[in-house]
Length: 430
Ligand SMILES: Cc1ncc(COP(=O)(O)O)c(C=O)c1O
Picture (tube, rainbow, N blue to C red):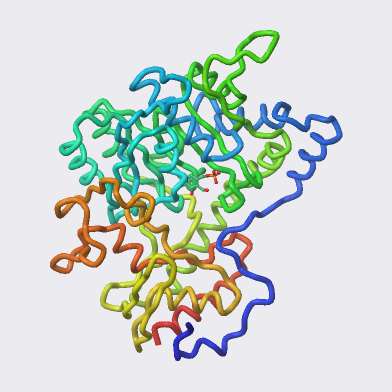
């Protein structure tokens, strides 16, 4: 539904403006072609070796293992952490075996699912307002409730580093390991250090929508040679050093192809350029929306430099029109001077551009609804309609999901296109 506001008259873009699409430069094709011509068309080859060396050097980790996806990197990272904490499983068991893991709540489900793959239970930790990442105060509270937990799985949402020092300090105090999901934040820094280097095991993604891409792919990052060797072995079906296929432990087909690695190799020199383009988009939105009752996704400018992967909006509570969301469909009532994410996303879509709701928090997802959820205020799990208490949100993630949205953030978007998007958002508040 498009509201009655002056939106319908706006001219759609002939070519769609995407949320975040691949941006190729030419070198990718050269590396892919070379792989083809020299017949290195499998999961070994120069492209893989080069990107492992170069990404490790860039991030500041000693070792990198190129894998088929960021999800694969997270899965093996969590499997390895489980093994370190709880010992070797029998081959058909997950390494977590019922143990709980504290996990970011407002993230993509790939952060969380590997915990279930390994038969663990995710305990979702609510979000703070300064960076939209795991709230250290809620994490502290979670340790009071579940003092036995030894693993924390954190993501940096939309390329914005979270409160890393606080989280690491809490982890240290409770002898917990950290899995760092830097899938969205490759190239973002915290106190001058790259994200993807803070955890005991770290993962990045080269999915097609990420800051740079291989069309797919991901990487496991670590300072431990032993861990890197183990992940490499697991990712190639855990073959033992024997003349025949000999298997002593569970294996996976998770290694990156040398063709995909060629695309990543061609993209790597353009990482900084992509970040600069995304940053310019973020700044332009911020200026363009200065007169509206909205704020941009926040970051800690003193301590961190995001990669600005996605630009997002948060509507002031006083400027929200009524909006309800079922499991599949949203509804809203248009109101003068106010708007809501659904109205704005409809308006953006009407001009052939792509926005997206904020990632729906994991504790609100049907498949994870029964998992524990810890908030900094209140008594843990908030009811779906009761997350506002005395004007303050108890369930911060649900509040940001309700009032926030991701804007078209494609680095090929031109200023005139962005101006039109800024204009249509203004019309939503008319
Ligand atoms: C936070 C987060 N973690 C993990 C992933 C998974 O990466 P991949 O798609 O490469 O498996 C993604 C994105 O896709 C993500 O956004």
